[in-house]
Length: 509
Image 1: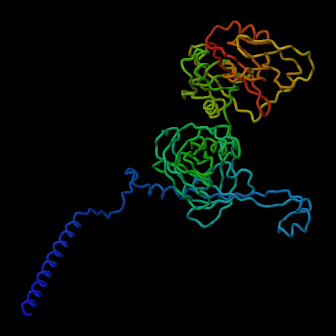
Image 2: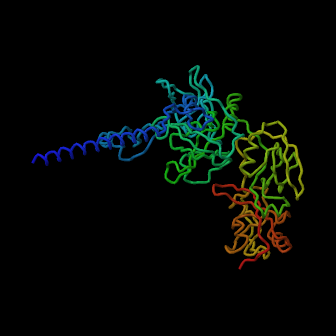
């Protein structure tokens, strides 16, 4: 018994010694591993050049971005509410006519651009409002705002609040932007409070073509949008798009999205365009835009070959107005404008924008291609008229004319214009040619966008007076591309003049 107890005691002591040694070794290993961890508790390097943080930029810019509260009185009609009983029952405010009077409120954003209270925003944020108020980020005061100017063609508006020493943003130069530049969007999406999103410039010179644009409450005639993937949602409109240094380079304006929320395609008005609008209102109370008196269209490779141009860059002149600045400068229908004041022209929309930015009365250089040869013209732009003169339709009757077949343009039927047809189509007095009555859907002409109701004005730069001219000139065409100048009616009335390029090398099956 004594021997067994001693063995048990010795065994226990041995186990305790081994356990102790093992614990010491494990602790040593843990300490050794801990020593290998790399911990850096110093603050983030917030130098904007490091790319680690944009906090200093936001601290500088965020106070310049404001909330805009807009509202208007709206009258709605409900016949039931003409009865006082139903008005009491539903708790509605109205009168015996059944009209309900209510106030619609909506929220947007804006940017302080001068210390004395001038604010830029999107026109659709304040359009139709009878009450506008502004809330600053670091100020509990709500300021009433006065509208200085509203410009639907660019969707820019200028407001003014009575305050001093405000944190005005620094403006950048949007003409210097490039695709891939980092940008920050600041605004108040969905009314949740000031929010910052980051992205890059995805494209420049963009136009809205998506019918799901949720902010298209009014037409934007001049579009030169900055496209970004920085999230822009409802409520961001009118807010700031700034570069990595905090300079204002755009006004957040719209998004293209099938769902009504950001899909990574946000659009902003370039600050140079907004600045031009603002300076116009501040200097003269209006925006004076340049005017040449031309109608334009885009050019494709077929038209470029038909007009002898080296490529499809530029804008094609379809109509030159009589006694217009363009006409006086010698510009002709069929000229291809490739630059204006040394700025390259990429499309018809781009040229319209460049023309609008010209100062009326100041000479400008236009570089063109005419019949394949480059030329430079000097034009003195006028000021764009506020409204265009509507043509007066002819209303006298005439005999019907039987259609004639234009064999060279396969699948196209034309006939002479008469007074009755001119009245039905509401044709301007100066439009003459051959009326297209039918176009085979399988034809090359249909593929080129020729449609019934169009009026053929020229074929291969030769004037068309009637259907016989159209047939004769089509039969005489030997070029690979037939250039057809047409007048095309518009859905809302009136029409436009444009050129088509019809492929004359392949035949309809």
